[in-house]
Length: 65
Image (cartoon, one colour):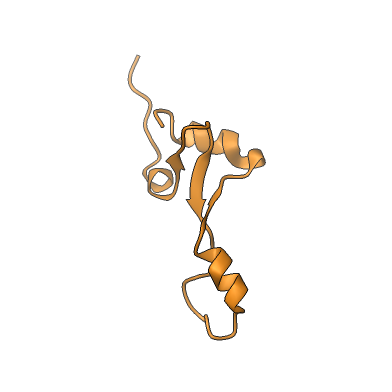
């Protein structure tokens, strides 16, 4: 059997962690930051886990992660 291909776009966005989850960056920290609240920007700077509903889709895109 040939090897399965990894979706390169997904490989750049998600990293596998030891507990079987994938970590990801949060959105809304690119531009128009003046009007956003400090708490919102502070939360957006932290990493988060991929939601349970999307976990299967990410695992399919990253077969060797």
